[in-house]
Image 1 (cartoon, rainbow, N blue to C red):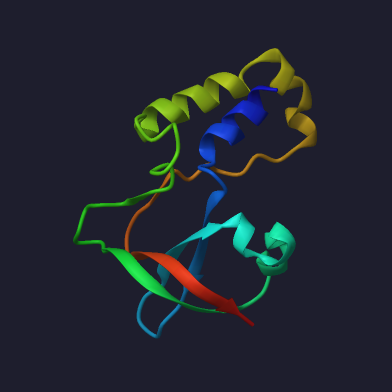
Image 2: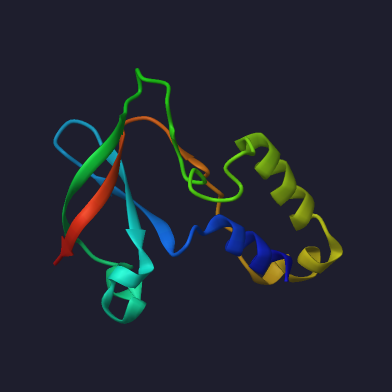
Length: 130
């Protein structure tokens, strides 16, 4: 129930961030695609979970290692007013509860990334194609 509330607060009216990596010859660049679930066929984005895709879109933000302005993945959510340290502390506290401790041996929880730092782009896609 708590996890469902957190997930609901991390969504913004069907708007979801897809984080990917492109690798030009020199350096890897992380790309955040800001997409609406409704824009996928049948409202299902499972078609692009795995694979390589081309994207045509508008770059709305550019970050680099020199420019210390990361892309905040919570920017369009009700949790955007919290800093990453507060959210990290809340997650650690939640994972320390008895309920989570009972299931932790059976699941793997990935590292939670709230900001994309380094060479990165924020893109509003017009088309995503195979």
